[in-house]
Length: 427
Image (cartoon, rainbow, N blue to C red):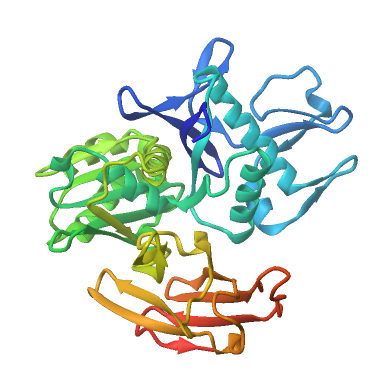
C-alpha cells in the first residue's frame, strides 16, 4: 500500500444534504467531518454550489458573498446530472460533470483539516438511488483525483444501511432489524433479514414504500396527532408478526415534534435509535470492509445489485492446480471487471467454476480453446476477462494475445454468457 494512503471515507451524497465520515483506527469507528464556517462546524452540508461566471470561481451554496447578484446557484444538480450533460444560462454554459466534480472536491477537501498527511485508500459514496450517469461520473471523478483503481465504490442507501446495522454490537441484530425513513412525503421501511443457518451468515434487505397509504398534506392540515397516528398505524402494520427488536429512524421528516411521542410508543419491546447520519456511517463501514480492514468476514451481504455466487477459474498457479477467484459473492455486479492472463499447457479447454452460496451448489463450465488448434504447446497467451451484464449473467471474454514474435496474435475475441441461476451457457 502506498505510504500515506490510509483514509477510509464514506459520503452520503443527498439531493438536499451531504455528509462525510472517515474511519478512525483508534476508536475503530467512523468520525464525522464537518465544514468550518465562521468557527462553527457544519456536518450537514447543503448539496449546492455558487458559481461566478466572470471569474470561474466556486463557493459553497450557503456561503455569504459580496457579489451575490452575480452568482449562479446550483442546488438541484444531482437531478440535473441524471437528465442533462450541460446547463445553460444567459452568461454561462457548464457541464453537469464539472458541477459534480467541483462539489465533490470541496467536500473531500474538508478531510485535510482532520488528516492532512493522509490520502484516500477507499471511498464509498452512497446515494438514494443509483443512476447510471451519476455513478459513471463519480467513478471518473475518483480516477481524476488520483484515487487508485477500484478505490471508489458507489452504493445505494439500502446497502449502506446493511453495513451500518451489522457493524453495530451483535446484541442489536440478534433478531431482524428495521429502519423507517421519512423524507418529505415519502415514508419507506427497510428490513434486514439474517439467515444464521448458513456460513457465512446471509444478510439480505427488503424495502416497502408506505407513502401511498398516508395522505400527509391532509393530515398536516388537521393536527400533528393525526400524523403520529398515521405513522404508528403504518409502522405497526408492517411490523406485525415480524421478529424485529431493533429499529433505526432517519430522515428529516422525523425531526418534527410529533415524532417524539410516536417513537416512544414504537419503543415498546424494541430498541429504537434516531439520527441523520446512518447512511454516511454505513458507507464508512463499507469502506472499512471493502478495503480488507473489516471484521465481518462471517457475513455475506446480498441484495438485488449483488451477485450471489463466487466465480473462479481453475488454473495451474504457484506449482499447484487451484481455483483463482475472479468475482466474490456479495460484490456489486456492476463493479466486477477482472482479467487474468493464461498460457495453455496441453489443454483444449478452461474451467469456469460457479459456486452458488445460497443453494450451496457448484458447477463447472468448460470454455473451449479449439480456436487455438495448430499452435505449439505453451506458445499461446490469452486474456480471460470477467464482467456482468446483470446480477445473474456474467460475461466471459477470451482474447488471443499471441506469443510475441514467435506467434502473432490473431486478434480474435470470443465472448460467452453464463446464467448463474440455472448456470447455462448462452452465445
